[in-house]
Image (cartoon, rainbow over all chains, first blue to last red; front, side):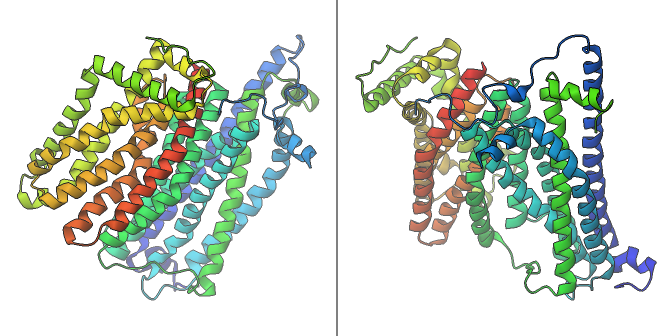
Length: 82
Length: 249
Length: 235
C-alpha cells in the first residue's frame, strides 16, 4: 500500500479532489454509457418481440441474408464516373 | 477466406458472434481495468515530482489511447464501407462514434484536472490537449452528420467520407499543433515518459489500457447489436430469435 | 439555367473551362453573393478592436491572427452557395451526369469559387492590415499566406458543402464539420506571419503551406465528388 490509512488514501496529500474528480467522471460517464447502451438494446429487443408476436400470423419478410445482392458482396456493383 | 468475409458481412452472423463474445469481453475487461486502477490508485508509489496527482494517468492515458484508436478503427471501417459496401462496417462507425466522443471528453477532462496541480492551471493549450480538443470536434461532426441524414445508405457513405477526410487530417493536425505549441509554450513540465516509468507504474497502466480496450469491445458489440436489430427487425432471422427460445439473449 | 450538354468528344480541360466560365458568369449576374463575404470580412475584423482593445500594441500582435480568422469565417460563410444554387435548379445533377470526370468539374467549380471569394479577400487584406496597425512587411507576408491558404480553405470547404447539401441547418453543420480541418492551415498561416515579424526566415513555412495546397488540390476534389454523388442520391 502506498498509503498509511484510508484517510490518507482519500486525501492523497492534497491532490484528493483532483484524483477523485477524474476517477469519478470516468466511472460515471462509462457507467451511463454502458448501462444506457444495454438498456437501449433491451428496449429494442422488447419492441422487436412485440413486433414479431403481432406479426406471427403473417408470413415474415425474406431473410436479408439470402438476398442475392448480399451485403457482404465486395464486387463493385455500380461503375462510377471517376 | 472469401467465405470469412462473406460471413463477416452478415448482420445475423455478427449478432450471434457478438452475443457469445460479449460476456468474455465484459468480464475480462472489468477485471483488467479494475486491477489496473486499484493497483494504480492504492499500491503504486507516488511520483517524486508530481506527488499523487499523477494517478490520474491510469484514467487519462487509456482514454486518450482509445479515443485515438477508435477513430482509426472507424477510418478502417469507413474504407470498407466505401469500397466493399459492407453493412456491418457502417454499423460499427455509428456504434463507435459516441463512445469515442465520451472517451475523448474523459481524456480532456482528466487532462485538464491533472493540469491544475501540475501546471497550476485548468486548461493549457499544449499540443496534447489541443489535439484532443480537435478530435472531440471531429467526433462531434461525425455524429452530427449521421443524425442529419435520414437515408441509411446515404448516411453511411457520407459519414464514411467525412471520417476519412478527418483521418487524413489527424496527422496533419498533430504535427501542426505540436509545432505551434513549441512556439507558444512557456517553460513547462513534461509529462512522465513511459519508458522511464518504473514497473510499479507502467504495469497497472498497461492493465488499465487493455481493460479499457476490452470494455470498448463489449460496448461496440452491444451497440452494434442494437443497430442491427433496428435495421433488420423485419427479417425472418430476427423474428426467429423470439420464436425459437421464447425470448432473445 | 442549364449547362449546354457537353458531348463525348469534349475533353476534360474544355469541360473544366466551360464550368469555370459559367460559374463566373452566373456569379456576376448575382453580385450580392460577391459582396457579402467582403463585407463580412471587414465587419468581423472591426469587432476585435471594438470588443477587445484598440491599443496599437494589442492589434499589432493579434492583427494577423484576427485577419486570418476573419478570412476563414468569410470563406466558410460563402461555401453555402458553391453548390446550393445549382442543386436547387437541377444543374448539379446535370453536372454529375457529364461524361467528364466529376472530380475535375468540381475542381473547376472550386477554383471559380476561390477567384470570386478568396481572391477578393486577399486583395482587401492590405487595407484591413493597415487598420490593425500591421507593418508593411507583415502585411505582405500575410497576403501571401492568405493567397496560398484561401484556395485550401475553398477546396476543403467544398467537401463539407457537398456533404451537407440539402440538409436541414446545413450552414451550422458545415461549420462544425469543416472548422477542425481548417485548423492546421490557420496555424501555419498565422505562424508564418509571426515568424516574419520576428525576422526569422519564412521559406519553410511557405513551403509547408504550399504542400497543404498541393495536398488539397490532389485529394479534396475526389472527396467532394464522392460526397456530391451521395448527397444527390439522397435528395
